[in-house]
Every structure is written in structure tokens, then in C-alpha cells.
Image 1: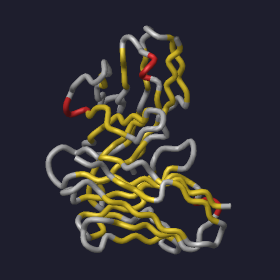
Image 2: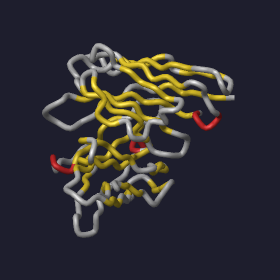
Image 3: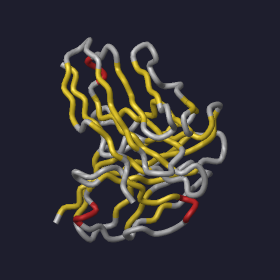
Image 4: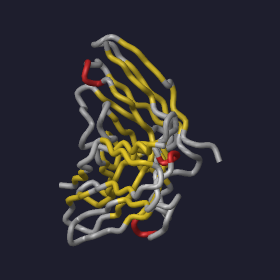
Length: 111
Length: 114
């Protein structure tokens, strides 16, 4: 079964500090991993995908298949990064391509 | 381009009543998803359509929930009868059939069952 875990419900850091949001997954095949973000009063939106290997708003995430992790990192947090972050996995099962979201981590960047 | 639209934005009903939600995906997006997001949890997939066919409804509580996408565009999700535990935000998302695997989400409908 596909499963995504995010161990931290809330993560608070000071502005300018590094931040790492943890994500672990379980999936028997080759998954596609995503980070979605939801800013206050906005809709859920894609932040980045592992296959594009890009940096968005200073955030990066590397897929580690050995540790089945896809942690989100940013070297210097900004106040505008405060939001809910969801790790998600897309994989194929008996029904086709589907998505599984983790429970989310609320990032609070303090001034 | 216009984003995914959902209505109503908020709905309050009493248990055992019925409720329906509407979603209009981004034009040209063949795949449409309905998610249930209970407070403090991540979105949980209820049903996935490709055009007007159901791809995955394995997590849809079919004794009370139903969904349709008759012409492969708009979709409705219905709950009949509602239970207290159905209180949640119901999210609709859509994506293109081919190309980048990215879902675009609507603003959601917040349902409160009293």
C-alpha cells in the first residue's frame, strides 16, 4: 500500500535559519514525489516535483530511494514561507495512477 | 487561464440531510479528482475520473457518497445522508491527461454537519 508520513505537525524556525521538512514514503514501485504548499487563504498548489530536480522559491528536495525519503529543504527561511506543506506520492496501483498525501507540516517562520 | 472552480464555498447542514458539491475543472483537463480533507489531515482521494469514466473510487463510501461527471467536464459530488464525520473540506482538482503530472486544485467547499 502507498503511504506518506510527515513526522512533524508543526515546525517553527527563525527567519534566516535553515529549514528541513521531513517526508517518508512507502511504495513498492517507482513513485513520483511532490511537495504541495498551501499559504493562508489560498488554494493548495504544487511547489516542486522530484523528477524536475528544480529549486522553487529557494526550496529543494532530493528523492532518496534507499531511505524512502523526500525531505524539503531551504537554507535560509523567510517569513513568507510560513504555510502548510504536504508531501505527496503518485504511483500506479490496480486502479491506475493515483495520489496519496501526507498529513502535512505547518511551517512557521518567526521574525 | 481560469482555475478550478467549486461551489458552494461553505455549507452547513444537519445530519441525515443531503448535500451536493459542484466542480468545474480547467478547460481541457481530462482527469478530475475529488478529495476529502478532514481538519488536521492531508487530502484523501475519494474518486478519480478520466473524461466521464471512473478510474478509481476505491475509497468512496458508496453507501452514502456518489459522484458523476456526465459530459466529461463538470462534476458533482453528493452525500446522502450526511453524518457528523463527513464534516471536512471537499477539494476538487484537475490535470491534463498527458504531459506534466501536476494537479490544479480548487478553493474547496467547507462542509459542516451538525
